[in-house]
Length: 253
Image 1 (cartoon, rainbow, N blue to C red):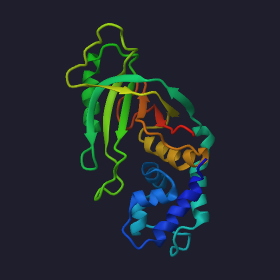
Image 2: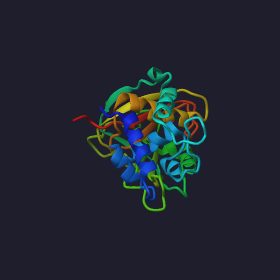
Image 3: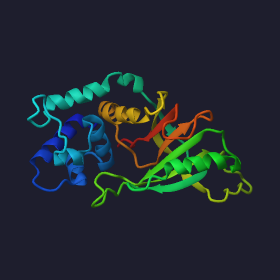
Image 4: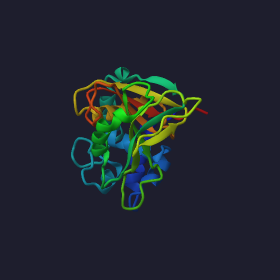
């Protein structure tokens, strides 16, 4: 099991001691945490990105406004996020191989096409034949080879808003509607968090997952797409009222 608090503390020490430009991959590797998870966890716990912390634009202090973040302060930050962590306890699910049909787009730091794609999908989802139900899935395939030079900590992704299809038929499959894509997701292990907060609180839920649940669970992210499942009565938007957040988990040794 990974001790994420100690790993983050090592990362703080490496950042403080370094005379070189910030390198997310190098700092994360030294901490023993994959770069994407390290980036999300650091932001969740500290409240700013690791790159911002490294440049000292708004560096946290140990209470007197002069000294860098201390170990006890890091523990306090994690403890605050961990309040009510039992309420975050997810279902651990071995999801079977599945198929989805919907509208896709590429998203980068300078171009977020998700809202426009969601609006188009709401108008067109009635064209999909063979769906399991009317629940909407928002699927994120991150490019974990990033960040590249000049992109700091942004990880671009390909996004699909879709309906899940039933088992593949033995005869001819229903055609994919014009302009849509068919994605096949392999079987994988997920932590499923129910999100029932008010509008605009999804980011807070993610912060608690990365900043509290991961440090206490010892789990690590798996290399699979992230999913958000919204029931049929919920709008497909970034601020939906209810959702399930499906976080891929690495398999143990």
